[in-house]
Image 1 (cartoon, rainbow, N blue to C red):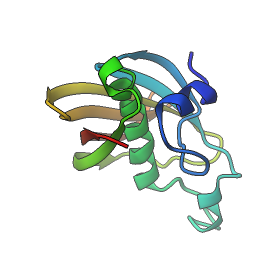
Image 2 (image 1 turned 60 degrees about the vertical axis):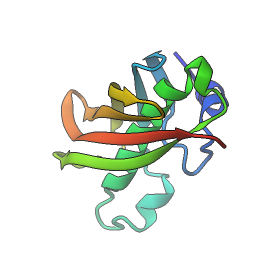
Image 3 (image 1 turned 45 degrees about the vertical axis):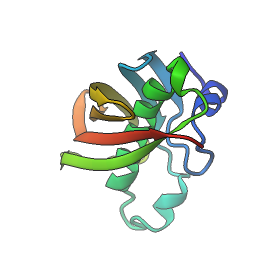
Length: 142
């Protein structure tokens, strides 16, 4: 298990934009599984939506990308670098994510060529798919 301090040693993101609370498992360059415990105190719930709080889909995608970045940036040759978004393909939102949900975030790297790669990403709550997407990334210098 990797906690916030270990995550912050790999990712440049910080509160309020660090969207991963823990990493359960990872294999450098291959995959990572993490969690986001969604609480009512999240800043975005103040405006999305005040009457029915729903985690914005783009933030779920960002959380999946951060988990994928853990897999890529934990490789020795990528330490100290940044993983940038290159694209989002085949994205499907299948379920709302609301306060009290424990979001399981899994990203598997399925293709790589040089600094560019694609991750297959799935976010679930209690085994139910919330979001699925292919995320394209590029590793660059800080």
